[in-house]
Image 1 (cartoon, rainbow, N blue to C red):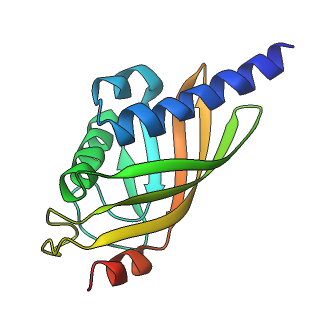
Image 2 (image 1 turned 90 degrees about the vertical axis):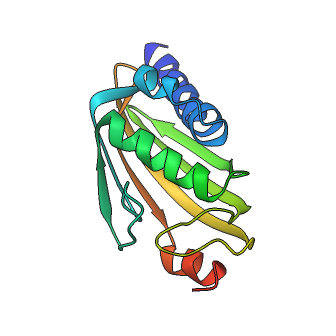
Amino acid sequence: MTKDFSVERNKAVLSRHFDEVLNQGLLNVVDDIYTSDYVLDAPVRSDGSSQARALTQGREQLKQRVTLFRSAFPDIHFSQDDVVGEGDTVVVRYNFSGTHLGTFAGVEPAGRKISIMGILIAHLTDGKIREAWSAFDSAELMKQLGN
């Protein structure tokens, strides 16, 4: 029973990641649901530069990353299409969409709509996200931006 509770609790934490942090931009939630030494391996650096893989380290860099995406795509929305959990790991297949209204990865806004599918694998400790790996097609994103 405890293990099932942990998995459900961890899924709920990931739901907060997508709903509160990414969709609503509630940066104060970052301190509640991520460890202080959090690491994210994902496309696009926290400073907005584009590269195939980039590390986001710690809560402050994560807040920068969220701000970057929400500034470039003010109407950004992440859906959680599949959520699977086992032990301390939660996997989410997601889709993010939005309208390009701010500079992103050096690309000036052109008002284009984007929609990109991705996957996030997160590892949690004591109900907080410790590390995550996210993959989405950054080349497809740049193509949709017209670059």
